[in-house]
View (cartoon, rainbow, N blue to C red):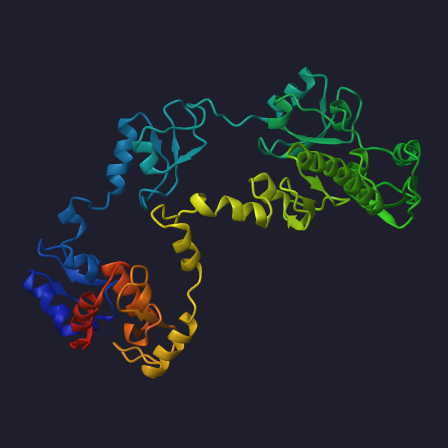
Length: 423
């Protein structure tokens, strides 16, 4: 956090730049302070943050506040007349008489200099009540209000269809919109709604109809009397929850037939009687003949099958670690090495369950073969051919030297890590 500047430092900074600070205290970097500028202007204020950036008074920057006389003459030069008696700033609205003769208009000086003028000059003159009323009459409608406010205010009127209970904004009227009856969106009657329910073998329990989105009690065609629905949903074919569950069950039956056929097309047989979803395990008979297996439909579509099929696909030559140079006897022996578990325990006991490099006793400890495991069959279970390392150093060693390693490489690694070698 930066240290707050002292008043003495700020005052001296102004003096060093040929200015004079009139304040008696310094508050912060963003507080306006009165000062005399190096140009001689005494009526100016500035923040110390701006002063350090080289900013000075408006006279120095050529942005001196405009006078009323200058603004008045500017309007006059452009054939307009300013009706104000004072000028505040560039963005304050001022009354003026436009060069088109319109005297009921306001504008800011910034907008005036950009070439903007009154609404009449732009063709956006505010409509009078008489003009709006005549517009309605020309289209066989009658305006029932006595004043016109703006384009977006709703007004009562009598439509050409005879409906007098309607409102509309002038902007929508010009777009061709009319009353609800003309648009075919007339509010439905209770009799119509009640009859609609009866025509669909249902019974409405309500005594009035409010609108399309209000819940109403009714008896469903399935016999369920404890249900509610809005009329818009009823028209779309929705019914009670019981009917909804039946529809879902019917859909699942249709889906189940498709899933069952999918299994059959791939020489498999589905044992289930229903389909729930894409991630539910299902019993089936695999194309290999295995009947004790389960799978999700998602995995089945991806080509996965039972465990037996997976073993066949990933064993022998299909396995990524397959070594073609090994004989069948070597493969058989390589699958399991008798005494390997005992060898690991003996190495751990000899090394006191401690990493021989960093001394770690917690975490994962690995019994490492000094002479490589694969080519040295006779040394695989010899305790003197093992050393206990933590997981970190075990990974680092094999990352550096690989798995066809020997004693000299381990000594090199030990010297680099702990400055000792194996005898």
